[in-house]
Image (tube, rainbow, N blue to C red; front, side, top):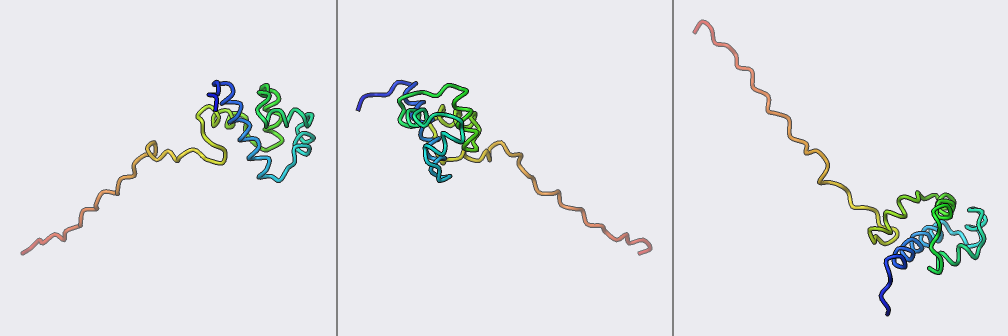
Length: 112
């Protein structure tokens, strides 16, 4: 299998995210194209990796799919497969320390 260029790899990952979401929503390519205001061939070419979508086209498709274009680009840039969310950022959460122990009130023993 020939090695993919960075652009081809990026286009493939973007396409995988778009296809994953389209299928999850139960949309056909035609339904997505109509919802996004694009031609069905445009959707087909993007999903098959023939064309890399322009920024405007990507925004139109993402809006129709209920996605944020920035998230799709970010996931594709990091090579994250579709459907995988970013790992929780536990390392950045502030550490919750236990409350300090309260001092016991001691009864004063006056007069003894």
